[in-house]
Image: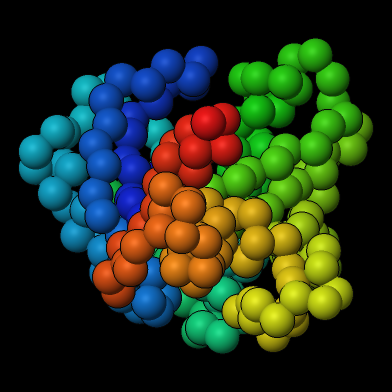
Length: 221
């Protein structure tokens, strides 16, 4: 199971990494409690509508934010929304199998280590650019988690000291608010009316997003 900024993805995967089935659901990330309820509802629906093909041996859960993978505690979804929740205990009420919980980029790095680039080298950086920006470092086959389980959060590194764009971490000019999918969309919406010749020159409504594909296509024009 994977919780992202826009979707929940649930799938059944073999030990070898073959995806047997999957289904996508919209996510709610306005709070950890609401996000957890979304995950639980999606898991119940998945069992009813898709079902399990094989005999489930365990459940891996990838979450946004800080996660203590050793205890199964979801510490925070982002710095302004922190409420420790024992997600493992909650999900095992629905599916009674061993459950592993970790940050989504940690999980992606683990998958890459086991089934991807880790087969070529045990030292690499996994970079994830999506709704936000984050990374994890793998050194000698070990994923560096950090004392506070946030090692590799490069999205909250300031890349423009003169920027007036605030980040959820409290800083200004972080890479995430400028270069992530959501960050680029927000910047286009903020600046669109200042550039009459731009193909993005118009007023945008509420939570409307500018797709990353549109941004890259526009750059290539």
